[in-house]
Length: 619
Image 1 (cartoon, rainbow, N blue to C red):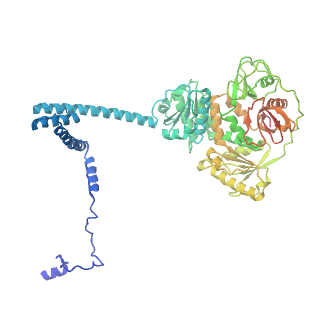
Image 2 (image 1 turned 90 degrees about the vertical axis):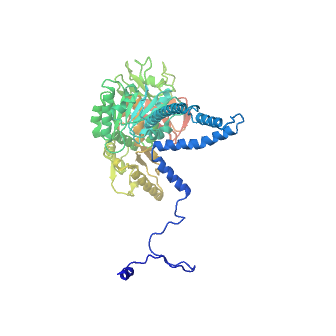
Image 3 (image 1 turned 90 degrees about the horizontal axis):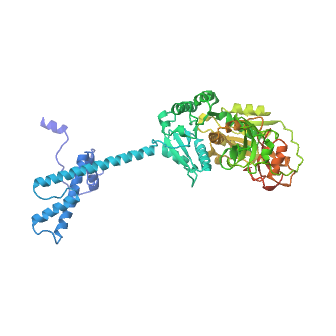
């Protein structure tokens, strides 16, 4: 049995010693033994020991800290005493001096005497040390929590006369920038933003919009705009105006309705704070107006974008004019009500504005009347609607002398039938085609993807942005413009194109041709929201101004009012336009793309072919 067992079990005896020789090529299978290189080094072992000590808790940390202090302080104190010439000569005296030095260093009293006295002084010193440590910890924790609360944007805003922006979207930076510019014109104020986003992120996106060297403040707070508790922290009842923005993504209009309801619950039914809100889909407009209450202004962004696109198709080059008209940089619309307006005629008042361009009349009930007849008399409570730098524009008591030169006007050319090729589609497309049809323009929709077929057969090309729920609605517009530019290079002919963009950040990326107008509908809607928030009475004026029919912003050749090559002041052009039923707002030189709104009336230039006069008048 023993031999059989030994034959079936491998031998465990030590191998026989042999002479040194080359190592075998193949080693026996099995786990390798840890060699010196596999064992952790001293630094790794020390780090592992520290990790194990830390996880044991505060008691172990305090003990090790005390031991480390004693190891460092006791030898240093002994060396300090033994090297002092004034130290006691006896060993007991030197030991007492060392203890006193250690106690003073570690704040343990350092008293000498009976053991009970030493123990009591150490106990009192420890109590004092714990008290101070706890006090410092409590103060540090409170400061840390307060700083964290400030970083999270959870504190209460104590402002008065500020403009409150509720919600965040792609248009929010533009709205905030314009509101800051509006407050900068007044020299004071603040813009408060409440959105369910990180406070640091909100400040980072709005930092570039903050004017320099002004007393205007930008305050950002984090919270849900539909939460009454969060709304109460930004004091909406003391605000100058409240702007409610639809967030990006699905359910934006429902969020606007909830925010408006929360605003009414926080402020109350009878608070006179002007509220301006926007919805993306016109189907939610009635619900939003009911939630906002009487006196509030709710804009349909889709309808506004469609009307602006129609006007830009009818008036090529109008997009930049509208941006300059709606922003707070330069001249914008103001309602003037100086003493002495009632009883005066509109034509006389238009000539009596040396630093502004008269646009129309605002009746006492807020109804605008753009470009009225010159003989229209203002009634009590009426205001004069002008394009001016600010609300302090001058209205002279008597009309100044105006050059009486009456140039023969060029008869307007008959409107030819126009055909527009529509590329791309979104939920605003049907409204755009209906608006073009109402203006007598035939819109032909091309649903083919990729390169359009025969765009040269049409008078204009309109490129619509992609669906809003796509996430990148401007991507189809950029691709289509690439194909149009390639076709222009192949055929050697530029195409009159109007392209819609929803985000202003994509404008530098757009491959625009020499006759391409980029209409950033998102930016225009944001500019309009900012304008109406600062002057709610302008909502009706803009609604009339952007209507597809009636008096609107038009681009007319300057030579329709003055013979080519004539040298005249801008005031003379204003008078000439008024004789033909239009109100001049500015001009665009032949060799420039940017318009000049409300230039000095005394500015003289030679008017040539290609100069464009910007007017408010009929189509």
